Amino acid sequence: MEKNEKYTEKLSEIDQHSPFRVPDDYFDNFYARLDSKLHGKEENRSVVKEYRLYHFLKPALAIAASISAIILMLYWPIGAIRQKNMANSDQTVVYSIEDVYFTMVSNLDENSFYALLSEPEKKEKLTMDEIASIVNSTFSDFEIYAETK
Amino acid sequence: MQKEDQELVEGLKNEKSKNAAFKKLVEKYQEKLYWHIRKIVMNHDDTDDILQNAFIKVWKNIDSFREESTLYTWLFRIATNESLTFITSRKRRSMLPLNETSEHLMSNLLADPYFEGDEIQMKLQKAIVQLPEKQRLVFNMKYFDGMKYEEMSAILNTSEGALKASFFHAVRKVEDYLNKND
Image (cartoon, rainbow over all chains, first blue to last red; front, top):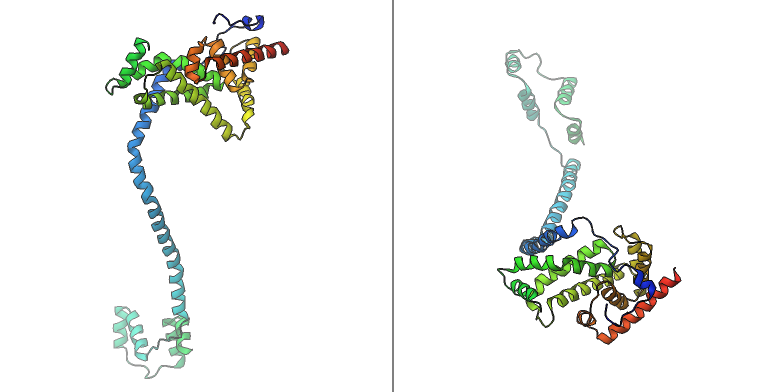
């Protein structure tokens, strides 16, 4: 205390040492923590360049990913709609009697096919019921509808 | 400048010896700077951050140290500025009015788990916390650290006369507080 500094009795009574303490080993460990913080900051500078490149590409990658997602999101619904439109189209498929015959024969197994060949012709003509039975077993309801529309 | 400090500065300005010199510098001044900062911000964790930042600033700016002042003065000036900047930024972030610093410091003081003083020391700390910033700085540096006005003037960049006046007013206010709260 300098010569002309005089405190009142009250202030003079108080201990002039700091009433605060530090955590145990604080000062012993301080330099090590400071050193890792200091050199950690210096090492981070070398990572900054890589980060900058990634940071530059990030928006481009994000845009590319967005466009891909949009295309995929539109592709399936559009594909489904196109298939549906094809099913609902006015185009009809004409099946000739030969097509029906070849379809029936191609579905036969080998033994049934030879049995059919060796069988005498029982009838020269098919009845309407027989034709209807063949058509029902060979074609779907939609195909029949398309033919008869 | 003391011979030891002169050698430290030379070591710090040399890339080969910078690490070793820096370690010696930290070990020599860490406690003094810690307590100086602690009295300003009244919180151990904040003090720890500020102390580290101050030393990092020394590491980065040692080449610009012109040695017009002593190393001691330069270190204390950095630590003081870092502390005051910290308080200002804390005020801005918490939207505190400028005159509410003492309330913030008071709450730090009351919540401090590292306070080991008695009742009268707590009263003294409360009295100090309520001083204006400059008076608080001067009071702490004079009363607790026993710093000379010449040193304080170099650190705070304030004339000795202004510092003496600040200290006089600070002492009066502290004594009034102690008498009122006896």
